[in-house]
Image (cartoon, rainbow, N blue to C red; front, side):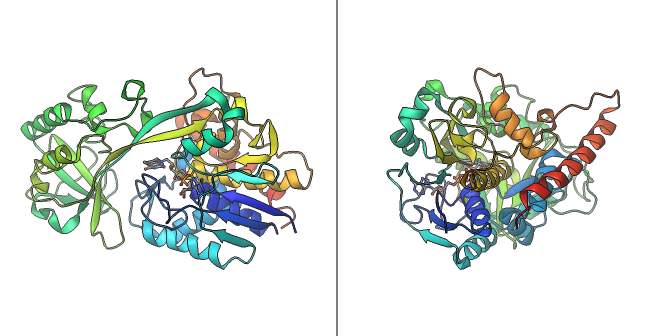
Length: 437
Ligand SMILES: Cc1cc2nc3c(=O)[nH]c(=O)nc-3n(C[C@H](O)[C@H](O)[C@H](O)COP(=O)(O)OP(=O)(O)OC[C@H]3O[C@@H](n4cnc5c(N)ncnc54)[C@H](O)[C@@H]3O)c2cc1C
């Protein structure tokens, strides 16, 4: 039986190991946690979510929903466990992060084709088929092992995570449950702010002390996950028209239409912990506490986890990798996850899935599977390998990456056509992907 190593048991590595095991390979899955944690992980569990517990939209007419649909069709472990650990989250797939990671861990541990090795891999054995899925916080590991093949194309950007509040420390008289645009839904706790409170908050955020970040002058943010202070810096009303917009909601008795709202979302099934949506930050812990406690309902807030900044590593796939995600200079070594230049939990999962499918074909000496640009998988790959950007940034799935619909139609109709077309192509791909299973 062929043996394949997978390095890293995050979302991509867990999916890849599971898929390879399902295809009959003997998998050695290396994970450095709990012995050696990263700056963002807190447990030894596989598939741990390092920040938000939302896996974004479940709606199929949304690109985030469509990529979940695709992975589900192919038998993804991560998507299956996500649905099984689902919390209330409106249209988003919000999970109990602990239950989610435990289920993934159990699945991998009980799989007789997978041998779990809890150790930090220092040197890669380049003679063995291996999938590298060490995640965005593994820059040092990447440059130590692959400097000669990745060279200066090993790039990075900065990302940030939001603070989490202990629910019982919140004044619920000054907040109410509800979701924008969904009636009778209690996915979010909303804290209303009047005009004065809003501008005070913006002023405090703008003037807050920030934690020192190494290589500060070169900082680059990912536009989909900007620190709240960076959003506030762009204009006093930017937050009020963005993540704090007071729209699409019925206000319960005793609440007037606010000037802005802050939303908090459950971190766990019982709702004991709530994260402040979109408040990723690099403010110092002391400043976070001071500012959070200036918010009416959070006067006595106890902070379970502070927001923070991290360095994210990724490689420029089109320069370093083949289309099947293997190294141009060593076709036995594949890459998967966020380090391939995709961005996001599910995109990383998809990359892990693709790496496993392509590794299987590589070992069987079959040509790589060409994923259609009409599907989320193919659209992401197309971005990685055929973008013309000079300064390539990791990418979330979005409909802009898909083959366009040329017909002159309204936006909604075009979107519907794109989704119908994607579903047809997913069926075709599914047949090929699951052919011998
Ligand atoms: C701080 C932060 C916040 C983020 N927030 C979000 C978010 O809210 N939503 C979102 O969609 N995406 C978010 N992302 C982006 C991305 O989706 C996640 O990083 C995702 O976990 C990437 O999946 P992955 O499998 O590529 O890497 P990871 O999930 O990080 O998994 C990598 C694994 O490899 C292990 N490992 C690393 N090096 C070694 C080694 N040498 N030997 C053995 N094991 C090793 C690590 O311990 C880890 O378990 C965030 C990223 C960061 C860094």
